[in-house]
Image (cartoon, rainbow, N blue to C red; front, side, top):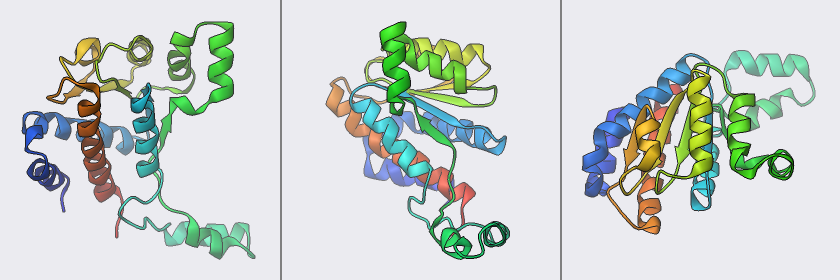
Length: 213
């Protein structure tokens, strides 16, 4: 299945997402450009959106629907590096697309919250980890989370692309992002219910692009 056929399949299951079809495809193209050029994805969200950020990392950094076996060349290098365990290591590893949820650095985040300001620890991580060519994905059901907006400003200053996954009117994030998906719902839980199939579809599109069966 091609990347854009994935979008069509998603719309068949969730017809309400027809209005954001082009935005989903633009999301995919932005991430493909990032990965084609050796970049990485940083993801920030709060509450349920924080859980979504970690969920996305889980789908990108290991096999989702495909095995993603290591290449024969890398298998040989592993065996050369460890003649006893290299074959087993090669059999267990899976190809990953570099992605990081910024919520998962508790020592750093709590230290920054205590020493500086909790609203800025996502921004601090984007400043420390981000580089030109990387992408920041901000997930906010309202599009107005302050800490996401501070992180987006740092990303833009670093020359990164900013993606927004939102709902309602899209808020400030939709205006600041290079590409935004604003799902057509108003209530937080309904917005989040539509975010999941969207990011699953995008993860599948990327997996289809970069990995064989």
